[in-house]
Amino acid sequence: RRCAGRFMASAEGEESETQPLTPNRGEERGAGWSESSVLKYGSLGLVIVQNSSHVLLLRYSRVAGGECEGYVTSVAVLFAELLKLTFCCATILFCLEGGPCATLARLKTDIWDRKLDTLKVAVPALCYTVQNNLQFIAASHLEAALLQLLYQTKTLSTAIFGVVILSKSLRCNQWLALCVLVAGVVTAQWSQQGAANGGSKGDMTGVLAALGVSVCSGFASVYLEKILKGDKTSLWVRNVQLCIFSIPLQLFAVWQRDWGKVQSQGWLHGFCPVTWAVVCMFAFGGLLVAVVIRFADNNLKNLAMAIAIILSCLASIPLFNFQPNQVFWSGAALVIASIFLYAWQPKARESTSYLPVQGGEMSSPSRK
Image (cartoon, rainbow, N blue to C red; front, side, top):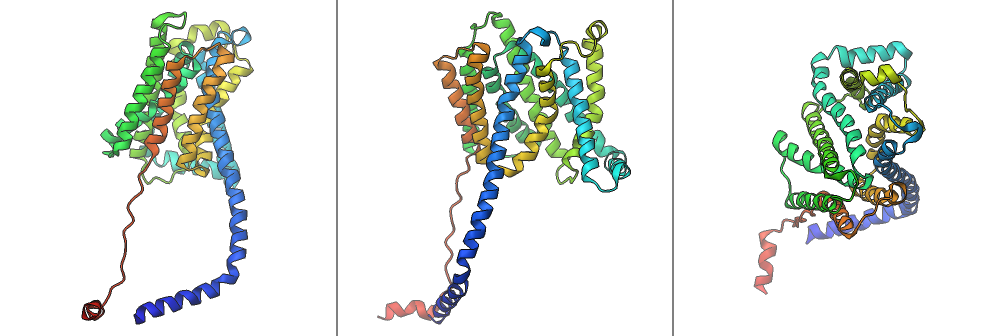
């Protein structure tokens, strides 16, 4: 009882001492909420624009025709990697004090002096190179709405590689979400089977390319998480390391697949404003998401992805004369539901703590 009395007295004392400061704290909290809300919802808008415009621009560049027709996709990927490398080096130069000498010293320390760590990045660089080229193949054969849904299977590939490579464990709701995701993608694909004039062969080529994109993306992200756990290398230096390997790989792809077209038509044949927008999207899209995602929590990320899927489907109707049926919308709804179900975390049960009570005080009620 004496302990309880002291606890109550101290609580009242603290309340009386802190009560005059309450309005000021409320004002500070309100000002902070305003700034954080701008960052959160600004990030939400950027992620929505990036995710929805990615497939729309990619698909439009492949079917628009006119001056954009016939551009070499491997050259577009190469220009995107060169642009990304230039931007990352410029960012390092801008952020470091000391000018170009400090930038070169930083790159030498993080890349050349750590040769083994740099070589480890060659595997994900290969995956990202294959992934970028497969995206153009998928966009040439599939509608943007269906392509957006198929891209969500990267959640499935990432989860499976995480279990196999990193020995991660998934909750029951996450396994259920993966099943719902597969059901939604299969439903959406089945609703569009045979709807295009290109026949089912072209559709299957696009589906396999989109699934290849998801597999490459999932494996690369899990592999990077495994080899770079606890590594403090900055985002910009990491992308410079990736470009060191991806640019020679992409040059080899240009030489192997499209060297005849490049020699006869030139490097910039078919490059119109839409094509350059696609190049910039490939160069800055991943960097943009990586930078702005720090200001958004998981709920906002999931909401952004769901809104991006809906916008991609709706924008495909006037842009590409896409005609979704009820089965397709059902599949899209299942995919969106799987996003929230996978991220849902059940609340942990709160443990009730009790103050220690002396034995004499416990026996007092029995005396009465």
